[in-house]
Length: 391
Image: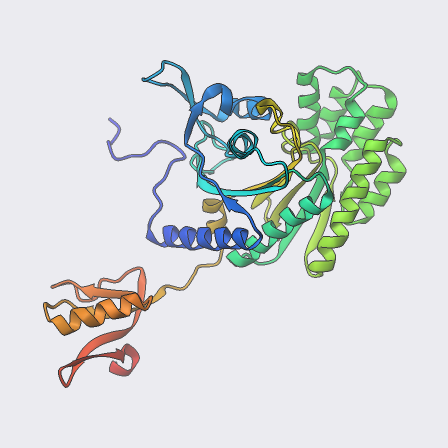
């Protein structure tokens, strides 16, 4: 018999130390986004299923928990990604003609985990720019993403970029079914050469050779020069390579120590992205800390197909990659009905100090705080004393 207190697979409680880290990081990221001019939106957890899975959101079908609305009888979905909701807000509620910078932070729920050991309840933070098709918006989103990871205290970072237009251009005239294209894209992303060879059998020889060439095109800026030599001459491919080079130059100029890499066969999120896509890794890690890119078609299903670029990350995953944060300094105080003591505690808390009152019989239970001072009575006045001095 299963114990009643056991949680479902890939669902877990967040205990004090991790919760403190996540909450502090959430505040930093939201404050940073605001400093860039991003406005916070809070979409609902539930929406009508056709809204959540419309357009590019259809790829989320297998991830989405579904239920029947007891009020209307319609099918509802629990959001598995917030971006389609933000696109709906931009299209129907804000309906601005110019640029809209929107950010969000809240839980999403996945029917299936993204990867082994991943949670099915990520805490998703994201930022998106609507209304500007130029690379300036792509660069701003990348800058915010990288500044956010730096503010979180993650060490050396690797920015990895690719572009969905390259594979789309290669396969556009081949007459392959969406299912066949999806299989080729998956094989390219996994760098499975034998699978690519098999799946590309029905393609023309130049396209088949180009798909196999993509498997070798990963590394530093030299990859883009090699791609220009080895890939077919196509305006969309040339534009993609030019855009990647432009972004790479600007990122390296602002962050000379950062490693910038290009992986032209990595088509993660192919059905979602329409142009440049990027991932950021902690040095030495194989799991991306965040993913983003351009997805200009995201608002089409809502009747407003305008440029869009953004990124998202899971704060729970990010907290696991961060160095352990020191405990917050605090003041220990005895519990007493003394009016002077209670007034002193209120004054300290109003001054943004943490004051932990030791309840009777529990003098030293302050697990989540590092008490370095204490309130003591000296000459009938409550005074702060260093615990190091006291010891």
